[in-house]
Every structure is written in C-alpha cells, then in structure tokens.
Length: 314
Ligand SMILES: [Zn+2]
Image (cartoon, rainbow, N blue to C red; front, side, top):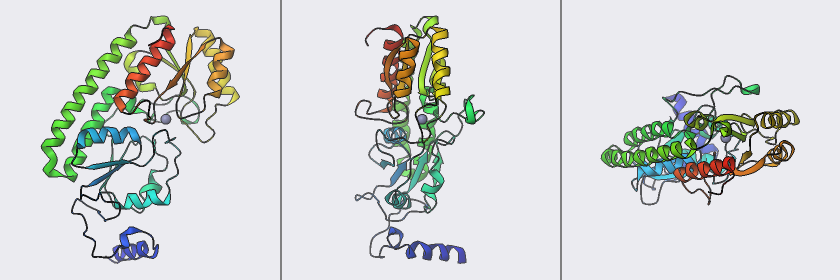
C-alpha cells in the first residue's frame, strides 16, 4: 500500500503527467490501469500498438468499438525508436498496449515503465525462426508477421486481448477476426501461387535487413542479407557488403532488394559490383502511403520480388 501511494505521489511530482489531472474529469471505466490521459473523446477504450502494422491488424479486429493508435508513425524505423515524452504520457493513458515481442522493440521497457496499462505480446504462441548470423546468432528473428500463417496467431492474440478489455464486444471481435483471418488466408494462397512460379534457380531473396526469414520459409526462398537486424548504423559494413556480393555472384541471383525504412546505398553497391539488378524497395517494418495496410504490404512485396527475379514488370 505504501509503495502504491509513493508511486502515485512520484507521478504527480513529475507535474506534466496527466495521471495528476483534477478529479472533475470523468475517468473511463474500461479496464485495469486506466487513467484519463489521451482517452478517446467519445469514451471508447484506447489501445496503443508499437508500430503501424500491429495497429492495422488491431483495427481490423476492433472495428469501431475501440480506438487504436500506433506509437511509431508510418515510415519510421521501429527497432531503435526513442520514445518521446508525449509517447510516455500516451502510454499512461492507454487501456491496453500491444507489442510484437521477440526483442523487436528494444525501447519497450522504457516506453511502458510509467504505465499501468496491461501489455500483450502478439507473438505469444509463435514458433520463432532463429537468426544465424553475426552478434544476433541464436536469437529469435522478430519479423514473425511476414508469415501470413503467423499473422493468424497475431489476430487471435488481438481478439483475446480486446475481449478481455471490452467483454461486451466479444461477438463483434470474433466476427471481425474471422473475416480478417479469411482475407489473410486468401493473401497467403495468392503469395504461394505467385512465388511458386519462380524457377528453382531464381529462388533467392537478397535484402538489406534479414527481415524475410519467415516469408522465405513459407514460400521456399533462400535468404541472403546484409545485416540481421536494423541497428543505429544501418548501412552494412564493408565485410557484410563483400559477403553478399560474393553470394549473389556465386548463385547468379538476378535481382537484389532493400527495405523502404533503411538506406539502400550498400545494396546498390552489391547490385553494381555483382552485376545484378536493383529490384526495388520492399516493405517490412512499417506501413506507408504506398502500402496502407498489412495485406497491401504482403501483396506489394510479392509483386516486387516476382518482378525483380523474373525481370518482368508486375
Ligand atoms: Zn526490421
């Protein structure tokens, strides 16, 4: 009890924090740890996600019953993001926080340190693919959403979390989750058919970040990348670039790619020196104007990969 009082007092000493707002504001009644900071004006519960892809998935399940907001913006680099003071205030005002887990959000502990909102990790129940290269060897690859089969597990975890938060919405969330899962299965089949057209000697996916391990596994592609997980430097070391040039040459890979959220300089050098095409930008860690939804992201990547590796325009 003493501890609780103390931490409440500390929150108020910090001054700007909205946990200290005057009592006349009506608190929402939506779940554990709720404060009024940032609550949707129409009184809907507010769910925060760490990045845009999770927000899109959660909106598909939530429908209109819940407000879903992503902390990182479209196009942002999400691994090494630094939460701003206003992000921390939003975390305090949230009714629920959804994160990816598998060490994706290196900033998550700092982001939630002052928040009492429950957190749910959407990769719970997913069988991780381990990273094989560099300092990350043996650690789980965090980009599990790049497998539509895994996305079905994300959706089920979201459905359960939203039902815990808003039990009256249970039927709505189930119907929305079922409809969305059907769309995900459809895109999975589409990708399987599309990438299945690639001849065996063209089944190599060369990227900047090693973010495609799950996609490569699902659709039978071999994977080669400059660096395993985005880090601050984000360019690729000369040694990493040399290794990929050698791999592309040795396997006669016709096209290489890089992700939209990181510099493509190193991969353009690979293309030039190995005599491969630069096949274009792939989308992994963030939605954007070009790929406004998760399903658009998967479709667009499959088109880009197919066009690059076959030399045909999509
Ligand atoms: Zn990434």
